[in-house]
Length: 374
Image (cartoon, rainbow, N blue to C red):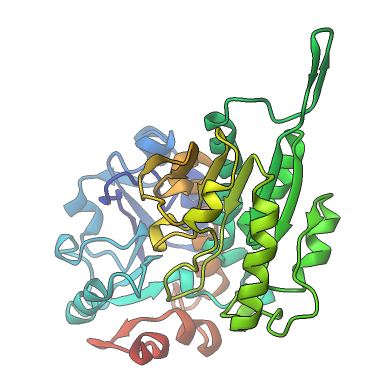
């Protein structure tokens, strides 16, 4: 069983899908591991470190030659995979809805594509969940990005020259990224409030020492989809939430938005009129900008200014903390493959619950129900 760790080809992607730590663990399972030269360079991992862990390091052709499992952070270009074993697994974040043509090409090439972001949110798969591991650090980085753009201090400071007021930070969307954003903003000394469409998050917000901002007594506040994700809410709720948020957002210095709905454009949370109500010098960080954005006027890959308010729209935020996000992502992949490793076959054998959830292609066809229904 040969496992190949490929160098990422997507523009701006600095992460890598394997580390010396996971290389050693795969070899201990009985696999051989090949790493494409330079794969870890942008995540602060030298080729020598992979070699010392027991991997062979070479060019892409040598890395792919006869490989049974191809590991990536983002889905590799199907045209670049020549030499891999017939029916090889591609295990990566594959963006199935956004890159459907690439998924079709994997099927045409005979590959078995496994989309790690389709991992079901069940207890035994928590250690395999790339969305959670990467979102956690994205929420942390969002606060640092806000602090870098905000031309004032976060904590209250009492000095001989007078008092500096604490920044007011509002987090919209309290999933993994939102919770970490709350915790990080609190650590930096901000006054933090947060909101979400899922009523169950109110307790989580308050447990972190933040103020929960929720619409009360309006139908549609559940907002709870399958697997713990948010879903669409009622029109009545949306109107009540917009009114509540408008009055609250005008008083905020920092706003961080994290709301995503799988397979659909990001919901619009902040309008241009709401931006205009904020104080000049305020900062909004839109973590959903690549899925259409939560904030009107946000631009992917840019920091723009509207009504004196900076709107931060960095692409691929996890990649901006490449060393740590790579370590977590790599462990997710190892935890997944090792959980299904069959010692007799010296290969992973998936069960139906997880296998059917993440498998996009098999036998030359697209087989995933979520993709076929879209």
